[in-house]
Image 1 (cartoon, rainbow, N blue to C red):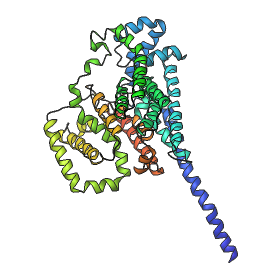
Image 2: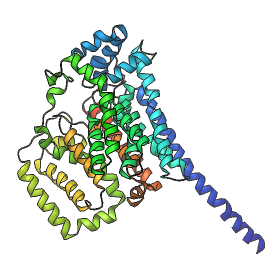
Image 3: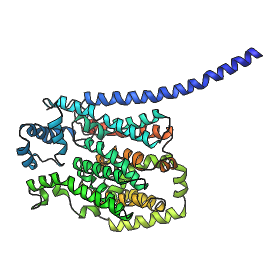
Image 4: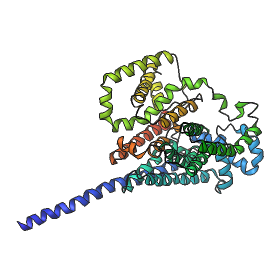
Length: 447
């Protein structure tokens, strides 16, 4: 009997470590697979954002080479290259990247360099103590970046988007301190600096600067407000000089090649599109909190709220048609399978605003300011692209939101990270299928 009991205890003693090891093996397997898939995508010259190859060929690559030959002449004639972003990225590449003699080497260095984004994200996640001692989950969450079609394509084709993420990460970290009222003069100066650098990288991040200043005013932080305004003005001098060089102050359309797509009326027409885009990235959160959502959906309050918003949107946005260019997954799904069904669009948009209004009392006013800024600034262009939200949604969720909210939304569990991993994997598979097999863009594209 003693022998049998000892055997039983020994069995139990070895079983638990085995389970722990098995979980870790699964986790590290997914991490390794993500890294392998990232470099395989580079080898096959994957185009999972639809335009990375042409952006590089016709805009970015000529600019970088001409900047190397004659920087100021190229800067003066920048509009000739029809590039939609400010020349910050191109300038850095032409000056600091020693591997720009051949296009494939240039692309590969960007593919390698952009992996440092994962390290920064991992560091900030650890700094926030989201997963405490379970650092493996922090690693798995970080490698989800490698599954984003837009992160991958921007890396593979040396595009401008990922540079902004380097600055957006610390900007959101210090922004979270501002929202939680844990900021000071030093953190506010760093926040202003990183927002400015993110803004130079991608101009739509001006919504962060606007929200930053509005929140400082709302908090009556007058000293911080004037410090920030002074730094924003100081750091804008190079940009203002370039704009004067291009004659922007005489003709606003000279700001970038995409300036003529910008209009105040687009803010109105893009409200459903932006709300649908945000809703798309709320799907994992909705699934992880299904019980709470289900209780709300079956309530009379939801039915009344949703019905009211649906009727309002029906009359306000009736007749709106979105162009085929841009729009994101749900807009594309509507165009391909539902023949651009207007009711489907306002149904999704109304659902988003119903969720927002339902939770409005629980949401910090700073997030409302940020959300309004997003709707105004992102709504200005005629075309809205999903790359403006992916993989940035991970940064906004895990770096910007307080840890207490993440826990309340069930976003700190291992199941949540696995779910996000497979969610982004699904997004990647759909993107590869759509561009390489539906639109038949070839692999191994070269020029």
